Length: 199
Image (cartoon, rainbow, N blue to C red; front, side, top):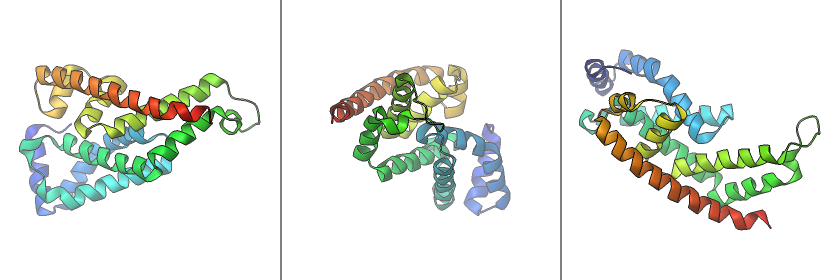
């Protein structure tokens, strides 16, 4: 994480089209963007790479409009990455994706490469993971970034406050709202996918 002074230097450089600023931005945040996109999209390297590439291309297109009073460089990049991940899920199509998740109960996914059957628990776990990713992509970018940082990356409240440029109390409050929103979104997705299981 860049400190406040270094962020301002990078922001000025981005606005001026400085190659050094882009290098500093990419060097400092690319691993975080890759990890975050992987959390939202999945483990398929080509899908993650495509979304990360679109994230940095979109950042390049909008860098001149970045406003530091609206958040940190990380929150800006996370927002762009979230938007690109949501576009990925829309491209797949929510209904088609949920139908594919329901079909994980079929033989195709249950068979491993050597032809042996995968346990039902593994199929259900894969379905759950994809439902969580889909739900995160439907939340607002700040909620999704906050939840993944807290619960998947296990960051402390103090780390989150620094990363998102806010107070610990604000982080606690936003986390509570984000959890409520996630539960509602997840419940909606699971109710949509349930009827398809029996088809």
